[in-house]
View 1 (cartoon, helix red, strand yellow):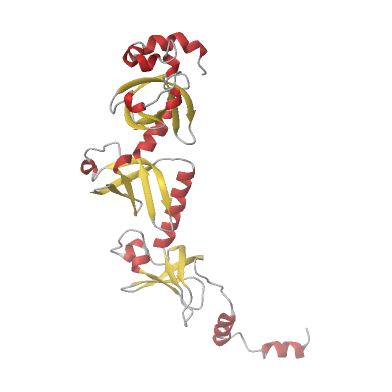
View 2 (cartoon, rainbow, N blue to C red):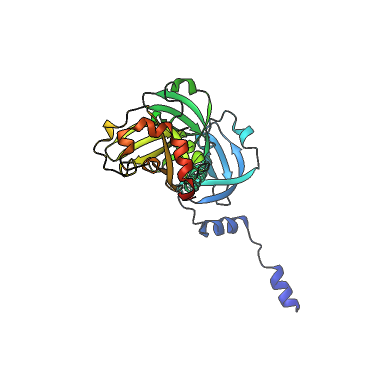
Length: 300
């Protein structure tokens, strides 16, 4: 390197603070609404926290957006210099500052987790917070949900469930409407279905009579006895043959675990067509013996 070149480099001005600020201003950070960014806790105010996200202006995290639950002490929850992820909930203002949220990021993660549990038909743990005419309200990780009375195992005294933890399946999930509905009954149904087999004789109680069939409760599981499976002869009216809370024994002929459906048959217990219509009680009294007699011919 010659002397002239050396003198030229020595005379070249350094990169000033003004040049650095100008470079930052010209840089496009492309922060946008809904983007997840990493940041470091910088400074506290009465209303929130300033967060260094690598932009020309720090992002701002309002206190109400610091967590799903109520926050009393921001410094305890978010220690100085702690690094974590934030969701941008408001785009840059005139000074280039974005508004951040941990709460909405956590809520998004909770909704995603619940959606996956619904897809996989997995149960969830709930805390009962209140009771109303239609059922009970529940809390799950800060989200508010509901269990209709018809989907509770304790239907007669739902008020006794307040303050207790329950396990249930997700019946309905609508993120846009902030709606979560759960079912204990469906969970019991799923658990019970896994314990039974096609060809098995079950004993239950009639809980509903419809024109197309009879619904039977079997230890918390609801099964359907279709009108075509009642007798080998034509059944004119189910109301003439069945009554609510009536004990009944029937054979499992189909199980659909995906839809949570169990189909029953009583006509398989008949010794001759129409017997169950003629003498229902006798068929029920001898159901076990009749089942044993035909068990070798039943599908397994």
